[in-house]
Structures are given as C-alpha cells and as structure tokens.
Amino acid sequence: MTVRIAVTGAAGRMGRILIEAVSLNDDCELTAAIERPESSLLGADAGELAGLGKNGVAIVGDVASVLEDFDVLIDFTVPAATLANAKACGAAGKGMVIGTTGFNQEQKIELEAAIAPIAICQASNFSTGVNLCFKLLDMAAKVLGDDVDVEIVEAHHRHKIDAPSGTALSMGHVVADALGRDLEKVAVYGREGQTGARERDTIGFATVRGGDVVGDHTVMFCAEGERVEITHKASSRMSFGRGAVRAAAWVSAQSAGRYDMQDVLGLK
Image (cartoon, rainbow, N blue to C red; front, side, top):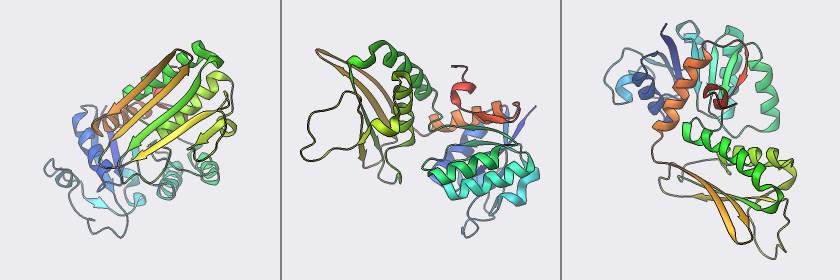
C-alpha cells in the first residue's frame, strides 16, 4: 500500500529535499505540501518548486485544509509551527515524522500532550549513518568508561539557528546515559578565560557555524596516550531526507506511540 505523505515547510531548503526524497521512494507518494500562510508561493506546484517537474500538488497555507489528503506529515520547521501541526495531526489521527529541534521545556511538554493519540517518529537526525554512530557511541562509552574525557565538536552552515545542534545534544545524551551521568549537570557549552583544570565528569560541546557546511559531528574519547574519535560528516541533506521518508513509511504501520530512528532501523 502506498503511504500518502505531506511535507510542511515545503518551500524551504529541507522541504524541497523532502519532496524529492518522497519521489525517490517507491512506497510513498507526495499528496500535500504546506507553507506559511503568508508565503508568496501558495498555489505553486510542489514538484516544480523542488525542481522535479509538476506533480499536481499545490502548496497550501494550513495543514488543516489537507488533513484528509495524507497519512503521515513530515515536519522539519520550527517549534511553534510543529506544535500547531502536532495538535492538528493528533486530533485527526495522522502520523508524524518530526525533525524540528530547539524545543524549550514548556514546548516539549505541550508536544507530548498533542501527540499522545498518534504514532510519531522524532529524531534529531534521520541519517542512517548518524544513527549508527549513536549505537557506536553507546558501545564506546561503556567500554572506555570513566577513564576518558569526552568532548563533542559540531559544525553547521551559517543559517542554522540553534546551538549546539540537536544531533550533538543527542550524542551527548547517549554518552551520558551510558556513563550513568545527567547531561544537564555535566555539560559545558564552550569555554573561555581561566576555566581551571577539567573535571572528568564533564562532557564538553564546541560549536562552529559558517559557510554551507551540511553537518559535521565528532565525539572524542580522550585518554592518556590515546584518543578514540567517532565522526560523521554529511555532504548532502538528502541523507536526512531519505531517512525521514523511510521513517514516515514505517510510522504509517505503527500503533500510537513515540518512536525514533533507532526503532525504524532496528538498532534497539
């Protein structure tokens, strides 16, 4: 059965990648595309906008107007928009794939309530390679234990609006959980001045923003005399797009609940 997919933020960089990724998946079909109500691109053909040629899907300004047209909504936008979409999908029983990052604590609570009736896949990164790295990080942290210092370095393009990246934070949580630490208590986000000697429990984050870097992440396990580094470098957003569409097809067959890419890939 073909899974009917809606993409919101359809005119943005990631939205156009998602539209293309849907077209590359034989099990999925783009049946709705949504943009901001004030967008000048409302009514435009989504396929043509993504450089694929016309596909007959006109961009609309409200998810509520197309709720009957899709099975799963893919949302890589901003927290406020994702929350509004989650409320609409939750009420209508439509699945979601959420790649939006940067939610504050209040928004996270609100999101949990909105998605309770439906199946969703939420992840900070939908790349197959990144999710494999999560698994490797858990293994490395458990083997190396408290004998290493852990530092996380990430780099993204100049337009990224949150820092550290959601992927870097997820990597930090994986390592902290494996080591029995609370990331909220041990994370250090950048250093400056006379910081004193490093505390072993610390998990450090360094952020780089510039140019058109799609996404680089490195976790360093630093010991006396040796260092283990686990690195992922994305050269195209299509790796995220393909993963998100794969997740959407998977979510369409699941019962209500919160899932992530580890579930989709069978890594749990």
